[in-house]
Length: 256
Ligand code: SF4
Image: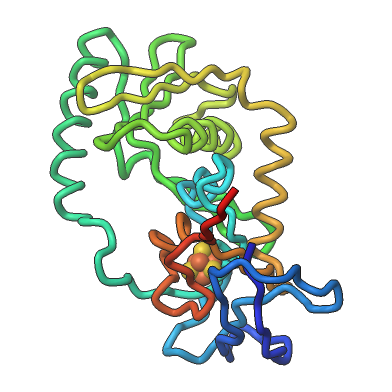
């Protein structure tokens, strides 16, 4: 359990941001109830505020799957243009592998009689209050009444993969992409061509509520608290501007 020394900062507007507080990964006494949780306050660190909050489905997917629990990280990413941190994901290498898998799978679907729409022709934008959610499902395939959304993944399977497809299945009929009005079926395809089906029944009212709650939080003027953890901070896209980042877990020896 971490304890924080917090410099309370004035509540920040989007244009003027300051990082405050510090953190320790060492287990210490319980946080007194009177202390407010630390917040990643908008700071003037060369970060440009977006004109309106922008949300990518992959960010929502990671939060829905529990891979991103620090709401402050999501809020900052939605409201500011955050430069990439050193050691971030190799986008070029990924693109080449991903493209190969996608072209091959699109061909396979065409050979099965589907009409296939790929990548940029699938881009959509959902205006959610003052936020915009924008994404691009890899493949939308239509055969008669059947509609299938496919996402190609070159990495190891993760639970956020399913959440991302579910989000596309939710948004595609909202924007009536390619005239689609019903919740489609979903499929994940991996590098070894193994496939995981994602059923339309999984787009439940509970799922929609969770998505709505996250979107509401990300577009809010209210800053959510930071919840540092070594596991999440390590890959957090805003770690290079966050003074709350931790790199170690709470550890102690006992002579029990
Ligand atoms: S570095 Fe850690 S504490 Fe800071 S925003 Fe990211 S996940 Fe939260």
